[in-house]
Image 1 (cartoon, rainbow, N blue to C red):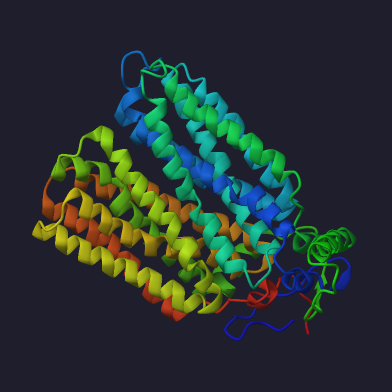
Image 2: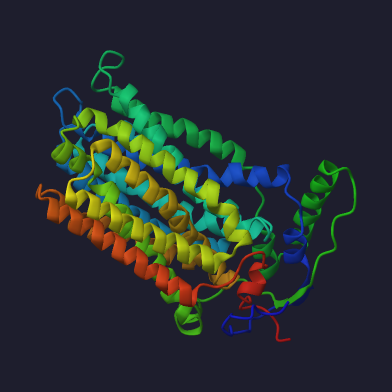
Length: 493
């Protein structure tokens, strides 16, 4: 299978048996079916849980700090220390489980990471001291971070090349469905007419556990990645899994013959890839792609924090919106975030990656610059500012989701989960640590000029990332993953 025209040369080698397989081509030529929906539902819905987690904690901060909540903790500790520990856990979990995912397989790890999330969330609901709450916020993030590495690698290796872009974007964008649910759930759970003050906030975490258990049941039916199997010396198992998928798809589509697979690949099977080999491949063999990944993640992290981190403070400070009502505004913003990938996702497979990544990053940055200018002139109300944010994030969400798609598909299969973990960790750290520190200082002053500057910083970094994509983005649309980045284990032609 030839390398992509703009791909950089990848190292080859390995030990063990040499096999020739059409497994990647057979997976890529499958028409969409219930088999693919099982994968999407079993793996993709965890992003809804992440959105639910992040939003709920922000919304219950005030209640946790009140007398009678059952927990001696301040609002600042919830939104500051607990949020930072969640981010630290997510970064640590991504790196830890990302390495294990490449070593031991996608399925083992996406089951383990979900169990870690479930256990930590359940124990958070039982918090009786602040230290307990902090520990299990870290461990909840640890599980969620591991999910990002295990899930994105599995999804991209199982979804046909024709649909890979739109499916990946919509799945990553589903985070915002959870955010909408978290906003509305908090309003109900924190109503003391319905639940006691020390019970309602615990129920929000309990719901996350219930949803996670449902996902766990569905996820048992999701197969291991055949691509991972045949490289790691389990070629016969990979063949059986693909034959089962083909039989299910053929039966669903009337029993006719499937299109012939286009091409085979010969690989040297190996049981593991050294960490130094992974690092050398990502940063030495593919330096332009590494710069691209870092740019996309950092750009979207700062744009999102420029808006979402201080949105409540901006509405209450400049427009006198009651703090109890900011959740409604956030629900509107979150809904537009999901609609963006839903509406634009297909274009990443048809118009192409480079054009769409560049345009969504640059356009969202320019729209935020325009919003900053209108805000500076005093031309906006709470409603029209929220409308401007919604338009910006409708476009930006598709771009932000494409960052996960990009780092998942532009590096060799043996490095995929670790590459996702690394770039996710860097982007999350930038957005979850340095971003809030910067934007909190700017938005808390109550000065229009400082808030305008926060918008401009996020917009500028988003535009800069878009320009990097214009030069470095890889034309991966409708191409096999092996064509975009040749496996390290591939035999020489």
